[in-house]
Length: 310
Image (tube, rainbow, N blue to C red):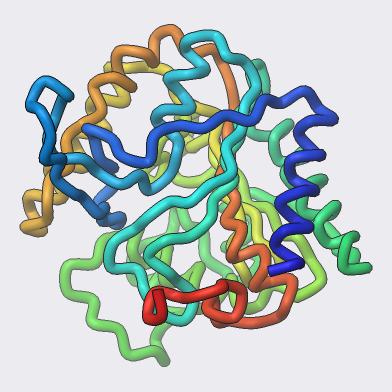
C-alpha cells in the first residue's frame, strides 16, 4: 500500500510538471462499453424518473467522458481512478481495479509512446530499477518471435506455432489466433528487464484508434509491456463520429450473435467527437504495474482486499 501511494504521488507530480490537468468523471453512465470482449456491471437508479436513464453502467474506463471534455476544450488531461469489468476475476484480474488514462492534444501515438515509456521508467527508478526499451511494429514482432507474417500468412500458418497446445478452435477467427499467439507464444518470452512497445496493429483490432490507409491498412495503436506484463494500450484517437458509430454497431452485431447483453451506445460521445481535437490517449493498468514491479502473477498481492475478500 505504501508503494502504491508513492506511485500515485509520482504520477500526479509527473503530470503537474507537464501541465496536464487531473480531472474526475462519472463512474456511473447512461451508456456502456460495447466492446464484445468486455462485460460491464450495471445498476438501477430508484429515484425520480426525471433524473435520466434508470439503468446505469459502471465505467470500464474513463475514456468516453474524457473525450467529451477534450471536445469541450479542456486540453491535456488525465484521470487516475477505479474502473470495473464484470466476469474478470482470477490470478491476473480483479473486477475492480485502478486505471490511469491521459490524453495529449496535437500528439500522435508515436509521441505518446515516448511519454509512456518515460513514466514507466520514472516508476521503476523509485525501486532502483532500470529497463531497456524495444519499439517495433506488430508485423516485426510476429516475424521475429514466431516466424509468421500476421498480415500475409494463412490461418493455418498462424495456428502452426500453437500445435502443442490443446485449443478448441470452434468459432475462432483470425484475430483470435493472433491473440493466442501473442499471449501464449510471444508475450511470455519478453525479458523481465525490458519495456517492449508494439505499434501499427491490424485494422481489425483498431478499437477506438485511427486506421492509416495502405496495404495493409494499420491501426495507429500501441501496447506497452514491462517484462511479460501488458501495462498500457494507446491510440492516435479516432474523431470521426460516423466511423465510430459503425464500430459501435459492429460491436452490437457481434454481441447479438453471442447472445450477450447490449449496453447502450454512448450518443453523448458520438455528438462530441466532431469537436474533439486531434489527440493521442493511453490507459495504464496501475495494478498490473505493481504486479510487474513486485514480480508476482497474482493481482491479489498488490491489493488491500481482492474481490473474494471485498
